[in-house]
Length: 121
Image (cartoon, rainbow, N blue to C red; front, side, top):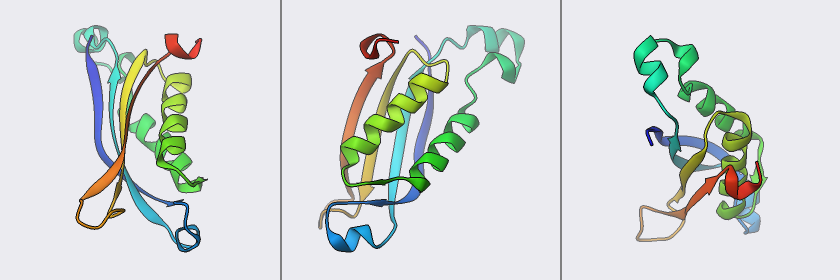
């Protein structure tokens, strides 16, 4: 299956469990790989036949900017659900990183894989 990807989509949000984290905005970064058959779009060369990664990005940016999760796990799960529910994506792999969360590492986070079938859609 073909994949459309978005790499290093960085958004500011309220995320974290500590009191000080609830009072500031921090960056999170998303990498997405979304299964989507690009054959029709490749043949037609028309945006209407493909997965509009700009629309996916804008939707996730809007959601993340408004959210206030404590855990990256919760934010990642909700982002995956939005993509699967609102876009013609059958399966996705999502990496959500929280840069600078642990001293000595560039980022920490989660990688999840979800599909419409596993969600009952």
